[in-house]
Structures are given as structure tokens and as C-alpha cells.
Amino acid sequence: MGAAIRNSRSITFGIVLVLIVLFLSLPPCPCAAANAPMAENTAISVSISPTDGTLLVVDKRRGQRWQQKAMGQGKIADLVAKGRAITAAWQDNRTGLSVSVSLEVDASRPEFTVTLSAQGQLRQSLRFLHPFVTEAGTYLVVPMNEGISYPVDDVSVETRKLIAYGGHGICMPFWGATDGQGGYMAIIETPDDASISVTRIEGKLCIAPEWDPQMGKFGYARKLRYVFFDKGGHVAMCKRYRAFAKEAGLLKTLEEKRRENPNVDLLIGAVNVWYWEKDALAMLGEMQSTGIERILWSNRQSPEVIQAMNQTRGVLTSRYDIYQDLMDPNVVKTQLRGVHPDWTQNAWPQDIMLDEKGVWRKGWEVRGKDGKTYPCAVLCDKQALEYAVERVPAELKTSPYRCRFIDTTTASPWRECYDPAHPMTRSDSRHWKMELLRYMSQDMHLVTGSETGHDAAVPFVHYFEGMLSLGPYRVPDSGRQMQRIWDEVPERVAKYQLGHQYRLPLWELVYHDCAVAQWYWGDYNNKLPALWTKRDLFNTLYGTPPMFMFSRSFWEQNKDRFAQSYKNTCTIARAVGYAEMTDHRFLTADRAVQQTQFANGVVVTVNFGDKPFRLPDGSDLAPMSQHVAGM
Image 1 (cartoon, rainbow, N blue to C red):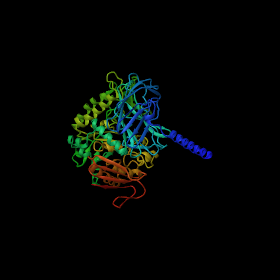
Image 2: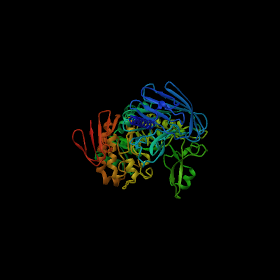
Image 3: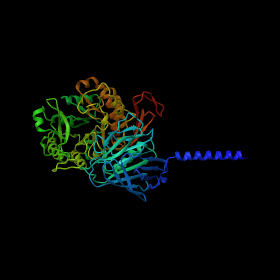
Image 4: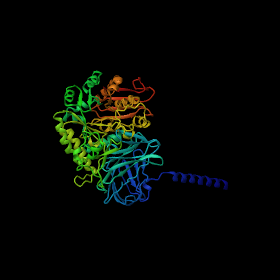
């Protein structure tokens, strides 16, 4: 009997010990955290840690928990929860600011906003809120130019800061993380002085917001919206952002723009051609004789050639222009052999942009006769429009271009100017940049493009040169050695720029029917012949036109290949040019086979892999080939 009791007690003790171990190993319940105020709706609950200000979000629909990890230094205080709102104060040790925090959960949607307010000087970026911890097997969603995904456990990805206020950052102000279905995204509702930091926690990639100073101060209230998904992955994120963009007045379709300017139709399905030699009309005729019918002719020509091209079916005449750079007249006189015809030299020195120290901002660098490089000054965006008004109408009287490419305007960041005669915040800079583009497209009735691209410009432009080309992963010095053909393929170009495992058509999922995305002029379809076919396949998958840059000799050697490239891409780009991209899917685990769908019923399937893929109708899609249905 005693032995039985002892055995029973031992078993009971063992069970209790196991239960204690199991209990201690469980993740903490948000409702159990001491003094952690919580706000919720039927879809999500949000709590703020009273120790470090981290957020814990529980998605009630899938039982998923999203936990932040403290990265910045500071402390939280004055936490108060009331209804669906939480207020607090964040004392930031790095900047010395006391920041008011206001969190509000949406009445029904799985979303909440956080608004940050503060008074006082801000000499460096504020790093708050904290990043959400990511799980192995998930990937970040980053709208860098066209878009990229970063597997969070990929050690080869470099960490970086990306501004939200210029084309060489994120071109739409959001980011996300997903396992392909569930996930979260953050929309920066006040992006003019905001950035994101792609960093790592315990070896895994994650993203945190940063709030940059406005003229040395915290300035206006900063706002971030978090959205949680139980399905849909990166496509759902893009569609949520599209709805946000529509509410913000950014969503203006190409169909609407065509009604304002019928020449927009010449852009849809047209290959962008940069040809530098003098026999432009002869080359145009040769191209059209091979079946390359719809052409955006981008290089400037004489008035007589422009008029002849305007009489040619399917041709949109354009030229390069810029309202950013001007050079010190002393440098021009002593070191340069000539002046770029589009530099706004009359702006020196009164309309130059000054930094906070009163020093003029540096722009494009030019090599002088002595072998040294000399930087241009940057024209203040607030002053640029008057130079366009002086230049464009007068030129159009003799050179009737139908299109104009405005370099750098959406590629360069919104900048502050400290000249007391024309001061600017970044918000002012954005406003005046958009006024320049609006003047071109609406007042001058020109089909308008700009460099790289940013969604602030969508209401005012028709295309972006460079949106398809991911900025950090272009060939070296692509902005200077545009005409160089690369026989070797740099690793970063193959892996990221043309890497189907990484790329995402985020821009197309939001804005395909609003602005045409093109490659960069130093990163065009025939730039790296070894990747020409793959680049064409991306054009096909995304429903976008190609870009060609070539010499007469390269054309003679490859004219059949150019014609095939046009046929493979532009027929589809024309067919879906006015249609929203409604879906993008990976059909194989290695992402080698991908599919896009468009609102007009066209479905494009591309096989980037080295093995055939069996389609639903029983046919095989060969490696490095495409299949189009619905046309």
C-alpha cells in the first residue's frame, strides 16, 4: 500500500513538473502582460509594452502573433487605453525628444494607425516604432522601383536605408512581410520626411521606420498605418495600397489620361528607342520594315525630322530634358569643352539650392580637361518651373514634339533649400517637382515621362524610364556608359536585377493601368545579350514594353533579334496597356514559373526555369518561354 502511494505521488509530481515546464515554455499571452494596455476589434488586438514600447499584435482570424523587438533606445510612459485607442509618451534617448504616441484600431478592419507628434529640434532621424520580428521561411515585400522580395533568412542580402521621398528608395511608401498568404504591411501616410531601415534581428531581415527631420525639426505629425492579412500575400498588400492611393488622389488611369491627350495611345505598346546616330529617319524606316511598328523615339531631332516622324504611323516623338543641373560659369570657362544644352545656366547663382550651411547642393559630376571631376549645382525645385515656361513653348513652335522625358525629377530625392529667397521643405520640393511635371503633361499637352519613378507623380506623368530597373542592382556606372554592351554579367545583376527568385511586380499590381514602367536607359533589353531573353520575359509577364539602345553596327548584326524582342513583348503590352494587373502567382516552389492576370482577361505564364512546365491544358511550357491566354 505504501509503495503504491509513493508511486502515485511520484507520478503526480512528474505530471506537475511536466505541466510547469510546458507552461513556462509557452509564449506570453498579451492579455497576461502586466500593465500592457490593449485595444482591439473583432479581427486584431494590439498591446503596447510598458517597458520598451514594443507592440504585440494578435491576428484573431489565424491565431498569429506579431511581436516587435526593441531596437531604439528609450522608454515608454503615460500609457492609457480607452476604447479602441491607446495613448502614450515615448522618451527617445537618441534624439532627446519626448514623442506623443496615439494608436487607434480601426472599427472593423484588421488595421490600426500610429500617429507621432513632438515639438523641438531633430538633428538626426527618429527610429521609432520598433520592427516586427520575422519568421524563417517568410519574405519581406519592398517596393524598391518595380519591387523586390527578400527572404528574411537570406544572409546575402545587404541591409540598407531606403528613403520614401525619391525614386532611389521606395517608390511607393509601404513595406510588408508575408509567408505567401498571411502577413502584415505598413503604409507610411506621411512619407515626405520618412525612410525605412532594412535591418536584421537575430539574423533575420526585418524593417523599421525612420522619421527624418524637417528643416532641423520634428515638424508635423507623422503617421503610420499597419494592415494585417490572413491571405493574399504581396498581392493583397498591393491591392490595399491601391485603395489607399485612390483615396489619396494618386490613382489616375492611362484611359483617363488618353481622354485628355489622345497621343497617350501612341505610348501604349511602343518600344522606347534611344538611337544616337544621324540617320534617324532611315533607321526608323528599317525598324518598321522588320515589324517594329510602334515606337517611342526618345532622342531629339531637327524640326524637319520631327515633323516627318509625326507623319509616320505608330511613332511618338520625344526628347530628353532636365531641370536640375547647372555649372559654375568659371568651371565652364576654364575646364569644360562645352555646356549641356539643357542646363539652366541662367539660374547661376540666384536660383541654386542651398543646404542648411548655406552651401550649394552638388549634382551631376562632369570630367574637366584636367581630368578632375566637377559637380554641377542643383537648381532649386521652387525655381525650376519658370525655366520650363521659358524653354518649352518657344521650342514647340518649331519642333512639334508630342512627348518629353524630364530627367531626374522623380529619381532625385525631395530636397530642402535654405536660401532665404526661395526656401523649401521636402514637401515643398515634392510640390514643385509635381508642378513641373503637371505643366508638361497638362499645360503643354505632352506625353510625359520621368526618371526611375515615384507614385507621387502618377497623376502627372505617363511613363517612367527606370521603374523596371532596380537601382542598387544595375550594371556599374550605368548612368554614364549607357551605350556600352556588356558581354559579361555582373553577379548582382543576374541575382537581383534579373533574379526571378527575388523580383516582384509590385508597381504593376498597383499602377499598371496608370503609368507605363520601362527599363533604365543604361539597363535596357539588349544591354546584356546573355540576359536579353530573360528581360523580354519579364516585359511579357508584367505587360510592359521593352527599351532598345543601339548603334548602327549593333542593329545590323542583331536586327532579327530586335524584331523578335518587339514581337514577344509589345503585342502583349499593347493588349493589356490599359488594364489593371489583378494577380501575380508563383506556380512552382522555386519561383521559376510565374503567372500574371489582367482585368481584361489576359493571363500570362512565364517559365524562367530550365525544365518544362505542364500547363492545365496538358501542353508543356518550355524553359525560358511564355504562354499567353485571353488575347
